[in-house]
Image 1 (cartoon, rainbow, N blue to C red):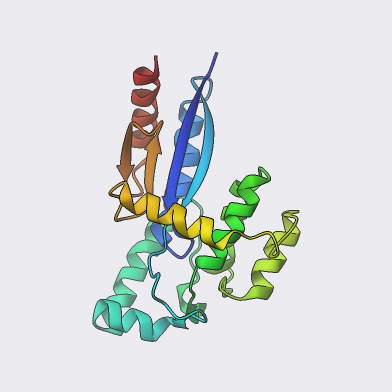
Image 2 (image 1 turned 180 degrees about the vertical axis):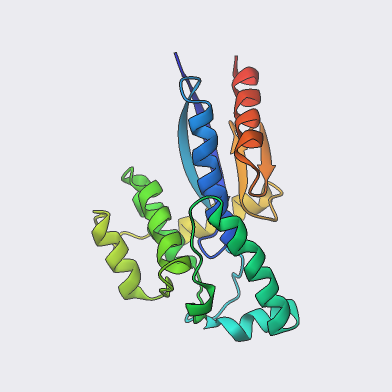
Amino acid sequence: MPRELAIEIASDVICPWCYIGKRRLEKALALVDGEAQPALRWLPFELNPDLPAGGLPRAEYRRAKFGSAERAKQLDARVAAEGRTVGIEFAFERMERTPNTRAAHELIDLAQRQGKANGVVDALFRAYFEEARDIGEATVLADIAARHDVSGWPGQARREEVGALEDEVRDLGISAVPTFIFERKFGVSGAQPPEHLAQAIRQALGEAT
């Protein structure tokens, strides 16, 4: 019989490697099908907690972060190539803003309390990276909440609790995402290949016996 395994994912929905990591985790779980019964929990981690509430123009933000528009394009091309290996078509050329993601994490938190987080996380990734929508905008978040039957948004969002949880994640020593945490025993950082994640899952199952 498959054994229950708690898997927590520290992630930000404007992190392209987190989107790739989510797809690779799904492939890893398929590799251990019948061995593990995963209980996924999404943990907030803002890559840019100091961004203005309305975000910044993406081109401006990327130039400041990477030194030049050309360097930013080279990095986007690398990520796009990796994304295609897991069925993601990044729309970097159409993306206009780098949003503040605090509200998106609050939506994930609310969805998680209703057992709907995985679909909402996927929708946020898809909206930003493949549909080039601004997931910092209230109307975009409301649309995703409605399409995934998340009730109580935004009135039941827990801003302080989500902020406290992010502080807890950083206190664990996590400084890069995605990070996959297994049974709070050990973690794996980066969008690792599915085979590596499957190996980590099997290791966690072994330590849980």
